Image (tube, rainbow, N blue to C red):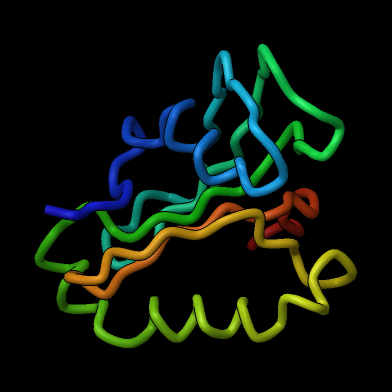
Length: 131
């Protein structure tokens, strides 16, 4: 069983608030999740999340992109060993470049046992037609 979200319903106000708390405490009242990818169980799941806060500072985003691993445990464990850990390391390495043409990573969580990771990114806008 994963220690990070792998299902849409596991992306909760409490979980997201804890990941965003790196820029100061916030209290999230409600989340509106929009699935950005057709649910392909072999790929990570992407959601655009609109956030309603009951307490926040101006440092908090109104909209973020949440990327979580596949829901299916067999697929997740088969695909997990290196891509997720490598992706997390890449974003940490490129942190000083984030906020320009690279989406800012607001937070990430790692499941050490499964070697998977989930991410909360800045929303840079809509996908181009056909992508």
